[in-house]
Length: 370
Image 1 (cartoon, one colour):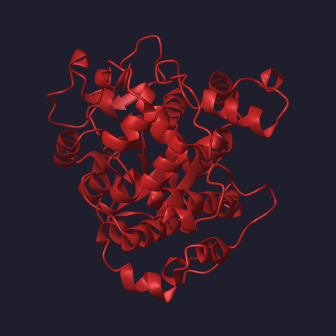
Image 2 (cartoon, one colour):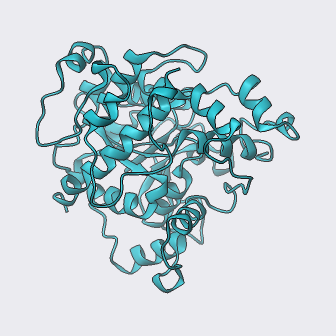
């Protein structure tokens, strides 16, 4: 089986100060077409990749290359909100930091802007004047199309667009004259799936609320009811969740991420936000920045002594606000449930491991933009 060829511990990032060559990783796949160095000192992609990469025009025309120096005043960020991967924490951070956001809240009828014909910025909460939204909903296809018709990006009124449909949002909202600077937080696909399974059993506020899953075993759900296997690869290449994906789609997704994504990891939330802020040109060290940081991550004297397990628990806790957190039993790597979910998400598991290597590789590049 595909996942059996990986031979890596998928829930661990490369140790600090140690980088494994991607050729070593991909050699385990016994398929040379997957070899791709994350080295940003060269713009040349492997020949096998370049033969495939002529297809995704949306990425080449509408996304800003990672190696292109940021120009925050002239760029709009498209933040790919991968469910149960820390996106809500990122949104809370940038609300706190005073960024103008496009998200679900913008077209909520209770604020009276859902039928506007022009883009406007409004402050929905009187007691939180730093929180600003534009009057669109970029979490649905219908909302994205409405935002595109209203000229959201060209208006220059939005700093960050949050959407779970990265391919559709990039295609419809951006153009060669208004390209997206794309951010994303990634999480181990098995952990993400398990979190989603327990969360949607009780999340009555979500459109995808699934009360019928309550009382169901994780194994039964994974075998019969999970509909978003290989979610990450499918979303990047623009396929529906019911569509099959293959190695070609994986290679395309890897190259798009390598070239265009500022990657973050849920397990490295604070460091990920620090990097995003560099690209955004935001001051994270001032009074407001420190207040926002402490609200989400705690002050330095509140943090426990670091350990691998403790750091993971602390990061996962910080990566959810109270409404979106969902304490649940952990699935142990090597268990039947873990192995089944890993096998069913084999391409996403490969891609996630690749992203952890990109995360290490991007540090020096992003620090050079500070």
